[in-house]
Image (cartoon, rainbow, N blue to C red; front, side, top):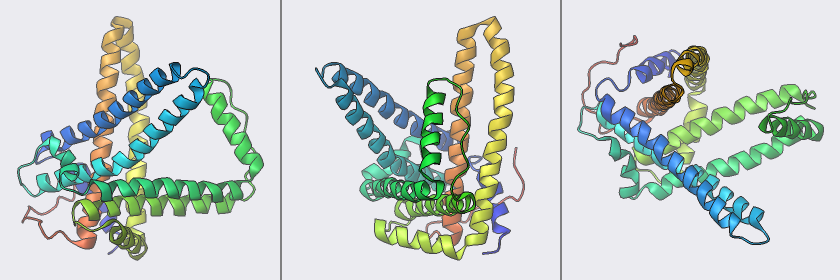
Length: 300
C-alpha cells in the first residue's frame, strides 16, 4: 500500500462514530469501566487479604496485585476486539449496541484474544532484558531511583547517559512499532476474521513488515495527534478546573472526571478504529457492506 494510505486511515479514524456514536462511544466507556472495576476490585481484595494475612501481609498484597495486573493484560485484548467488532458493525450500518463489546466472550474467541495479552507480557519481559543491556546497569538503577522518587513526590535524580544511546533509541522504535502493530492487527484478525492465535500473530507480523511505510506513518500521525490533544486538554482543563474549583470544588471534580472519561473514550475509539481500518484494507472484510465513500476530511 502507498504511504499516503496512512493519512486516509487517520482521517477515517477521527470520523468514526458518526453513524452510531451511542454504540461506539458507549462501548469505549464500557471498556474503561470494566478495566477500572477489575483494578479497584483487585486493590480492595489485596487490601482485605493483606490485612488478614498475619505475618506476611506484604506477600499476599503483592500476589493479588500481580494477579490483577495479569488479569488486566489478558482482558484488554478481549475488550479491544469487542470494540473493533462494534465499530465494524456500526460502520457497516448494521444494528449494534454498546454491550456487544463483550461479544468475543460469548462467541468463543475470548481465549484466543486473551492469548495476545500473554504475548504482550512475554514481549515486555524480553524487551526489558535487551533494554537493560543497551542502557547499562547504572542507567537502569538511576532510572528506578528516579521512578521511586517521583512516586514519593520527591525531586528525581538526573539520569546518566545510557551505555548505547543510539542503539537504545532504535531498539525502542522497532520494539514499540512491532508490538503495537502485531497486537492491533492480531486482535482484529481473531475478533473479525476468526483466525486462531498463532495464525493471526503470524499474519500480523508479515503485514507489519510488508506495509512498513504506511503503518509507521499512521503510527506517527496517531501518536502525534494524541500528544497534541493531551497538551491542549491539559492546559484548557487546568484553567477550567481552577475556575470551577474556586466556585464549587465537587463540581470541578465531577467535570474533571467527565472530561477525562470522554477523552480516554475518544482516544480508544480512534486507536482501535485505526487498527480496524488497517485490518480492513490489509486483509479485506468479507462482511463489509456497501458503505458511502470514506471522507477525506474531518467531519464535524
